[in-house]
Length: 398
Image (cartoon, rainbow, N blue to C red; front, side):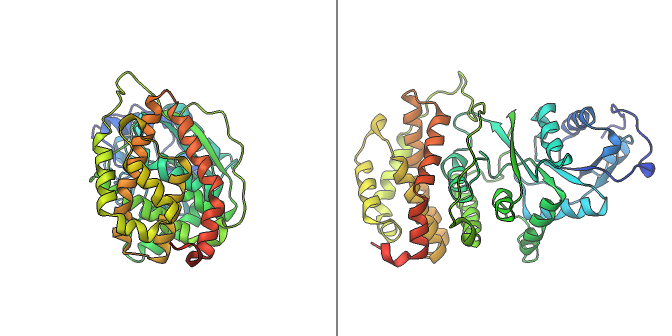
């Protein structure tokens, strides 16, 4: 790393008071790190910042800033249990009053985005600051199909990205989620995902969402859907199971705010070929029907039978059917109807059917965000279904 210092001068680090905000950075190439640091110092006085990075050379390269080296700091594509533990320990040890966690490629976040996420927790106006990204229409569809609607229906949150890779945390929010994270790290599950929105909702903490515009999202080391969907959905299902006493009570989502769309179309976004998705779904219907029959009630199986005979551009999965499918898989996960790995694998062809349907709906002229909001609303309307099935699972068995 170069030893030049393009940042504003500040007093020596030994004379700095306790930092107001700890900024926990993922590992970044030098150019990206410098860009993030310039944006941060344009928003906050250097003496109010404590930067934690895995780059051991950063402390010497940027003497105007207070920098600590955190060897285990943010190297994965999303925030893990170990990251939350590290963040709270560093904040506690260095008298930080709030935390800003930034994921890989965070140089793609605008200066106003960084300022809003950090200011929300610095000023104590919120406990959890969540970004709302503007992504291409075909990005983040696992989030759009499962994570967002399920979180909204059960935890009454309209935060569009429950598994965001950038977060602002108050100290009490960091302490709470760190305590949860330690249960995973104590069992050698340091890479486990946590769900801050759910945790904040249970604690009665404030949650605020901020439009941050476009953002480059890092890719997992193994971006294959067969790996990602079971991993992410399984983590959320487990968290929902652990918090069942909370979400079974009636709650209303806050009123919708006027946001710019979370999906940003461009001329390069040609309609993809859905034939392979539909083929995977039909093969699933032929080969996984026995497993699906253990999970889904007759009405849902009848809906899937009709879909299996629907061709091309006419293919549409009803929003209520998709909501009930996800809820029934959630219940089967809880009661271990079959091996959980096999269960989540059997969800993949159904998810691809939803994606094919979503693509067809968007191709017909419907705004993608409008359809995703309709899906989330269907999950909310179907919440009594999962509450009933959760309490009396045998009553509805096919």
